[in-house]
Length: 153
Image 1 (cartoon, rainbow, N blue to C red):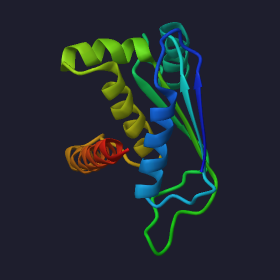
Image 2: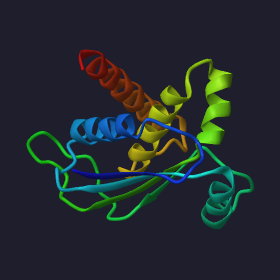
Image 3: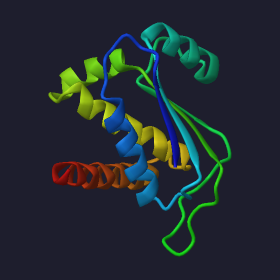
Image 4: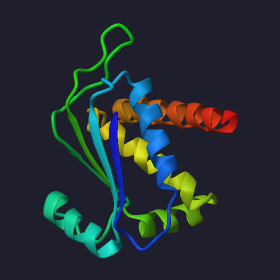
């Protein structure tokens, strides 16, 4: 997998952990090994510009996803085709505030948001209750599985 993590923010983050998570999520979702993904971390000003430009909503947000080839999850027998998955853009400052509210570290919040963003790239959404239940269930399972893998490292 080609996964590029680019921290353009002023917040220090564990880029290697985000990359390991992305590999875990894409493997778990049976995305082709030749798929490409970019994870970019930006400060609040840059995120606010993206949020206004693409979502027509004011202020910075925590995560935005920009799909490219509209890849969908595959199966063990038939992985998704190779292609450009897209970009996940994270704002560590917004994530930090959310992490404090949730009572967990910034690193956990960034892992959650990265997983959430990748699922959006794979076509998942949470616009209605059934979609939300499915997406958040998959998200939870992926984060639990990744945490277990990390403990074995």
